[in-house]
Length: 262
DNA sequence: AGTACCACCTGACGGC
DNA sequence: TGCCGTCAGGTGGTAC
Image 1 (cartoon, helix red, strand yellow):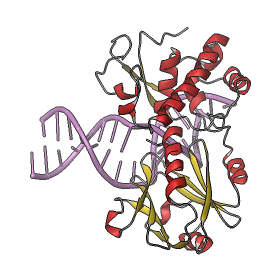
Image 2 (cartoon, protein in one colour):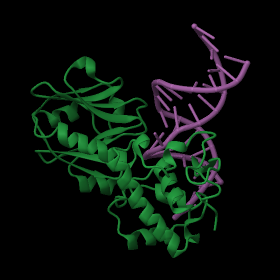
Image 3 (cartoon, chains in turn brown, orange, yellow):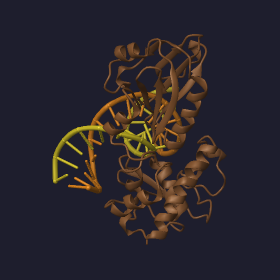
Image 4 (cartoon, protein in one colour):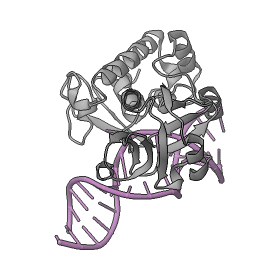
């Protein structure tokens, strides 16, 4: 689930539920979720601190503390946040719980343990260490075009490569290519200027629409592929049966009529 | 530099 | 009802 729009919704959620409250305790269910730090040290770093700001880069959410440190949250395929007021409200698979003075708790839940929680000195050093590219919503057109033109891989894996552009995953890359009428197996360097421009504007529009609708596909306007990704579904624009193909180890969905290879 | 594959995990779903 | 194979929207490592 969590690609850029989902993580942006989580960021807004964290922003409205978890700032300025002193952290009284940190409970850890699975140490496996941590990346580069022990649960004990993580808890020690946060004791008595507050989150004072949030930011996001691609699929990574940063919760800045009032000391010189930042909590990094990555959600894998199944992660999410929930503010609760009682222990029994905690979601199943709560891996880390940030308990605030006053009684509320921010739960980080991640069923499949594919997410990661980390602690970094600052956002910039984490971004550098992970070699994260520019955020998909912040990248300038000229830079985007350069990335696509220089890529020697397929357009789908180019869009999904977090070191080139941060934030796009399997479903949103599919959606962007669908909106732009680009076939998923098209080599990136084959695209002409008009197609690159179309991909760029589709990327921005798709991400903004998704965020506006809280990343909930059921609320999306018609004409989006996202709610029609299942076997036997039809293209919301031309009615063709949506196809599935394997590309770069992922399963891409596309409309064979609206997305022709050039 | 690419890509193809495996691995890490759990849960849902369809077929039998 | 239960067992089994398959699949799921992410990432990282390794071997070509």
